[in-house]
Image (cartoon, rainbow over all chains, first blue to last red; front, side, top):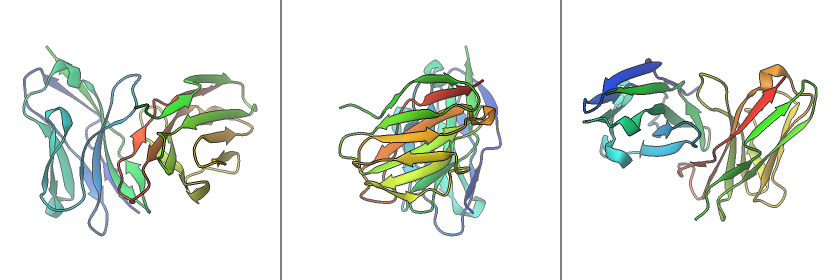
Length: 112
Length: 115
């Protein structure tokens, strides 16, 4: 069965510093991968997605992610974090026909 | 345009009671999903509708859980004989349904607390 692992439960980053959130997947074929962000009281919002083609994908709010098949990873990055980026981030993979299997999430804290 | 809406936003009930949670998807979206998010966890899939029919209900934990979408729009998740372990945020999502990899748009969720 498909699965997603986010090894870091929470991460603290200084405002203006770079960010990398880790995601590892388990899937036999080419995976369809997503990153979502969840702010308090808000619904999940899609940041970016990977289906095929270029392994570096650009998303909203200055985020990008790189698909690395050899490492079964799809890590999320941002060059300079803003205080408004503090939220919980979820990596997900499509399983079955179109349902999503999520990781447990990484809580991002931004320090001044 | 309007996004996915869910009502109520919060529901507190007593163990053993019956509850209904409602989801209004984005207009025109044929695919609708229910997920459950327990504290400290990522969302877990419950059921997926394509139109009026449940295309995949493999995530429903047991027969106390049931969902309907009679007209292919609004969906209701029904939980009978609620248990404390059912306490979670129930998320609904919809997508255009044209492809298995369409973006899913999520609602804000219903927080269910079973006392």
